[in-house]
Amino acid sequence: MVDIVLRPLADAFMQVGVFVALLVAPFGWAHYRWGGRLDELVVRYRRLAPLVAALLTMPPGCGGAILVVAAYARGAVSYGAVVAALVATMGDATWVLLAAEPLLTLQLKVLLLITGALSGYAIDALGIAPPRRERPRAVPAPLAPGVPGVAAAGLPVGSRLIAREPALHAIGVVPVLLWLALGAGATVSVPVTFQLLHPSNLYLVLGLAGTGIAVLAFVRGGCRLADDDLREARPASMAHVLRHGGHEVAFVTVWVAAAYLAWSLLSHTTGFDGSQLPVLGLAGVVVGALVGLVPGCAIQIVFTGLFLAGGMPLPTLVANMVSQDGDALLPLMALEHRAALLATVLTTIPALVVGSALFLLL
Image (tube, rainbow, N blue to C red; front, side):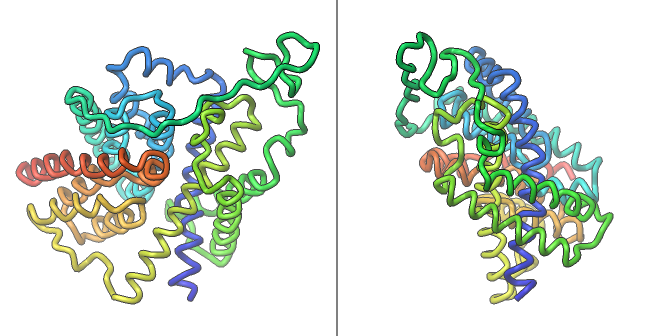
């Protein structure tokens, strides 16, 4: 029971949620601090979009790719930028590889950056752009009676919004609990990830508590990504950043927990652990690319573990990393399902090309 159900649920929070939060928080702060200038840069200089999107995915985890997906849903970046981000991201498997092979991780990051940017430029050059869902425009806040230029909430119109509510109330009780759980989880999960500590009962308890709070935040947030609402596109205060980031972390954690649990149940009931896959030669490259079609990071982390254990060659791992879209594909499915389905197919093409080329070179 512990290994089959409880451990995967705890790992989803401790191995993924915590590290996504470590990326979401600084990205959210930067977005608040500079007022979305990156979005404006991408919109103004459209030719830079795929390269910028690929660069955003260079930090470990899926935070950068999730931000690109959210920007695409708002119409701020091109479809090529989304594909570039999905190709370039190594997802949460980065943490597994980084702990064991830091130099190889850096080399693969550079390879993914180049492959992602080129793929994005190719998509835009070919004019591939599936139709996006129509979303209502944000409605301006009504003006307060008798007070020119002041919204009903007591906030100046056209300026950065400054919440007058108490900080705790502005953020929300559930997001505050989630951030506290993330902080506590980080003190244990970071040393465990880098093999400085072994998982203990405290790891399990913190992970289960964190996943439970994430589920609660996910449900309270309407079971959607925070950026699904155009009014949430730009944070108006640090309280907004924390509330928005909490919803984002909760969204990713819940989907990863579902993937981890499904993989655990499958492997324990059928005995399938990935070692039965043909991972040698060109057949391995094809298998690695096809496995990358599976959303989320769970099976990709398994692939990375197999590689580190000597169970597969480098070309197979590279094909999988190029093809896999990380956790960013899950919110893209919720926001733009047609774009998501097409993107996950398109990312297998550079995966087959790069994986095969690497196989021939090695």
